[in-house]
Length: 116
Length: 114
Image 1 (cartoon, chains in turn brown, green):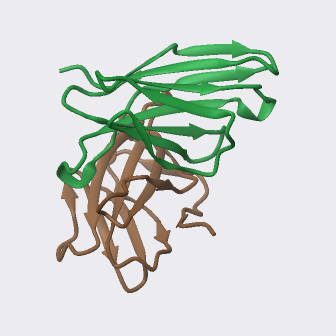
Image 2: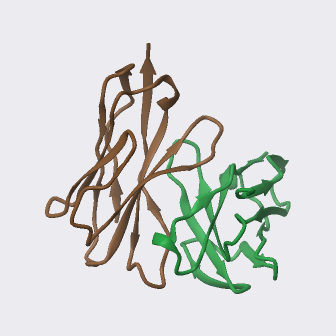
Image 3: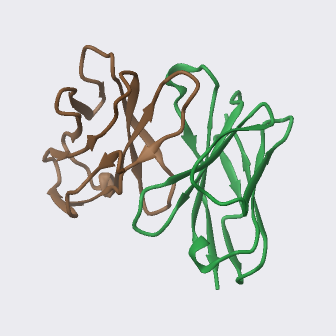
């Protein structure tokens, strides 16, 4: 069964605008972590932001924020003030059972193109 | 502080051949995970090495094997290559029990099987 679902088609966003990337997840484990990675055309996966299942507040890292809705099992990424360098694939990932298991399950990704 | 490095960058093989990919973890990290990313897909977990042993394994056949050395570097070996093994192979390192067990990825090795 798919654990991470990212279903949005490729997105075009105007420079300096905000963009929201959707991610829903499936787990019965009460302890898990959610990650967002950016993958530019070079291929390297770049860590953006992390949200733990027990974290009380939504995570923020600079221009990135995570809209964590635990009851809905969603973890949407918000990129504010888009820049041309934000054009990339964005992957949502989950790690279940935090202790003793740090394999990541990834979604299929969202393509973002920032236009000037 | 060097990040995760992988070699080679690109590789072309033919069906039936064997391939070895290499990964050096980020300084201070002791755990290495390998992922396969087919074109247009998210990465799929292959296996993870810690203390020179395979600790976890994803849904990959035995043709995929690995090794971790005392200096924490790692190799991924794939035998009897199939066309479907063509993918970007990503190595990720982390510190066991570290902050959120955050995984740092290398640039990947792009394998093409003809």
